[in-house]
Length: 160
View (cartoon, rainbow, N blue to C red):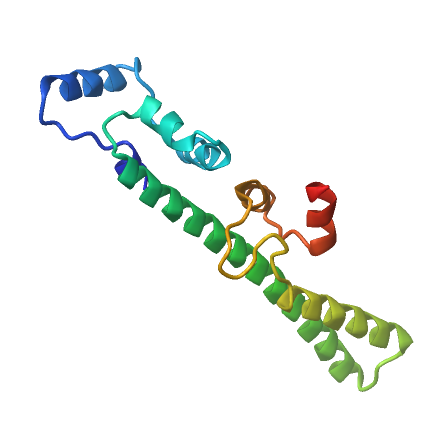
């Protein structure tokens, strides 16, 4: 991704001059956080082209889609890990009850809470996406940065 975002076709003198300026620190390179920031800008393509004028608009749009997919995937992995952690908690509770040979009221409450948390995690949907429609990239960036999934009440609060 970063290699493609910062690629320069070395066919002419201006491109070589640009590469030398970038190597010497006089021209910027794109890094992941800046690329995410271009998703949030209404002029993201233009912002990107100011940093690297040698990437075509088509390449930029394709890379922006790739960044979006990466962010969605990373966020889903984090969410899956939270669900797996809750599975471990639930298994630990069942193991404790099995070793004790019985479950007291506290155990039943803990199992119910853990099971409800797991159900909530497994059934979570993104509140700011609709099938076949676009979404607000600010919400995705927020989820990505904080490793969370916005619930409907949270999104509605922000949308107001």
